[in-house]
Image (tube, rainbow, N blue to C red):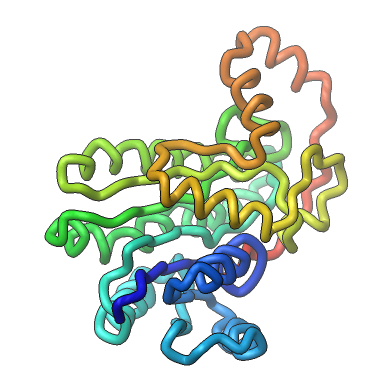
Length: 263
């Protein structure tokens, strides 16, 4: 119980899985949350980690009661985490001219935004009482500007950025840090079905190493890889008229449902 503890959602694949492996390699304990808990448990057992280094909790981040139960179980069995990573998310292209895509938009917001809040909420008061801790929201470079075909995903990840920024202002006086990570293209099940170029594609273990360093440093905002940070900065400061001309000339991406990110 003396080793630090990281609580990670969306841990059954991709970024969440890579973060779990990185933390364990550094001597941490991990509390791992996923819908596919059995799949996650099988993966963990295959890693050969000591039994006192990990626990798996079954929960869908959209289910607030299930997340409360997972958090309570973690607090009882493993203690109060030092780091909580709200990583679980989905990416689905939508067309807002289609009525049938409105429920898809709702699913995106419930998973990617409400899921982050449901992940953080049980740990905020205990971290404030302890006077330290770190909450990590996994956003995306797609949070910077709205991209054709991705209205729901861009809106959801933009909301994650603002949610984290608000919490940062509320919690800094209590010694609780809030870190926002904005991945670019990471080689995960979420991106492998993309039918368009993915510049600066990064392996998940490389991303995890850089992300854990950023979390340890308590940075407020970090785009990984750094090259996508340059792209994000250019997009942020690009005049709306120029941005509209550029994206207006693009065809909308083919709408494609994407698998959940490590849920």
